Length: 230
Image (cartoon, rainbow, N blue to C red):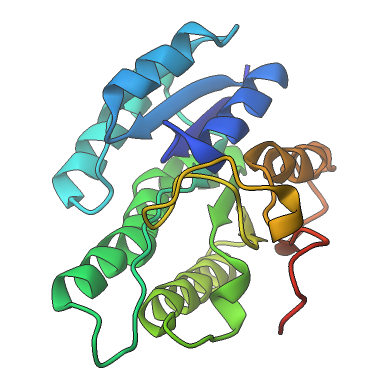
């Protein structure tokens, strides 16, 4: 049975992807700061599940998480680096601590997560799915700091791919998603331009079934109600 790691899996996109992977028969490794929600999720999944507190902004947390996972399972086949945060405002107004938090989670957290599991992924010729954003290749007012962390994440994923051809790296770039993000809560109408987390997970499902000779490097998806911007 293949082993999949999903960070930021207590809710939203990460939770939906975890549920999809359980349906596909993966053993699951779930990491997030909210262990109570991870426990609830694990109880409803019909597969082997290991979960642990994980804060990707802290190197020691990532190292401990990866060590326990590799000790238990011996290796991993898929890593979904999904943990992310967002704070918004004009560049001259955004707080240092908010910008720093986004860098630690969205950029360095993604780097730490991939790096921690990379030897195992290379050995098993595995897959990394990095959840970034449709803004990882564009900008918008009041989003400069957030966007910068996503552009940096995109650069990391592409460089990891160049340096590690044994592993397939996919940057998954969803547009607006109806989830817990930047202080908002789920429940927004589709007509307002939001994807559902389950739709993002369904877009990923067939890509994981492709032959090992096929590498999909990038997938951007948006609601048909979201204005196309490039």
